[in-house]
Length: 279
Image (cartoon, rainbow, N blue to C red; front, side, top):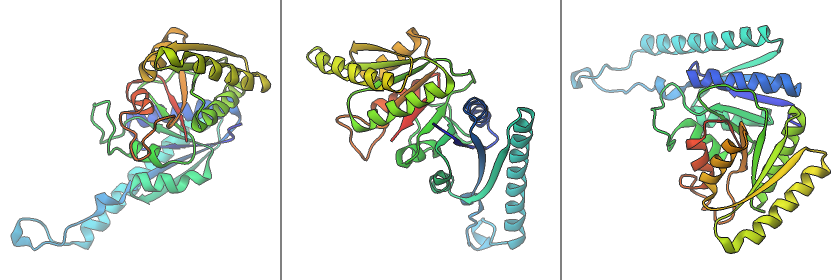
């Protein structure tokens, strides 16, 4: 059962949605909640270039002023989060950190069991792709489950989990079963065969996953389908009214060094509901 939740607070609209999901889950799971705001240290890099080049030379007062401004802004964001949590009856622990955001989040993940991230931040464009984004860097390397939130909040009432028999899919199934039990929501298990001749194996995966869910007294049903896994996950989640998708970060045939182009990337980029990514 998830009992420690951490969310990234950056003051963006998507960051607020991540906060809302984290708070809702903390209340429903009776979990401890923490927020971290990271002051991007790269914004404090000042070039040491001569004035005649057209770029201002190093000025300690400018550096100190910028650092203090960024710190103050971070404190404001965390204060707002604490106030929202207090209104909801939640005790919130906050952290203000300096450094590259992705690395700080990866370092601090040891403090939690679930990391909640907005799909986009203050400096992310509207493209659904996330190569090079803080969220993309974190989910590629995280060891903790990551919940990537969409652009609006809806309480989770039904969960879909994808299974293909791989180790990460099995871990995702365990997380989904515990989450469904904790939230008292039904679980839909989807096993996809990319080709017709793989349908028997998909059905076997579904039966095994269902047995595991029932062993944990989870209210679960199974579906099997033939086709591309990413689009089918989104399609079946919509058809069954699921408002959270859980899946392993990679399954069979995964190229470890890349996330883009994978089933996980397809779902994260295009989902309009939160995605729980398990490594």
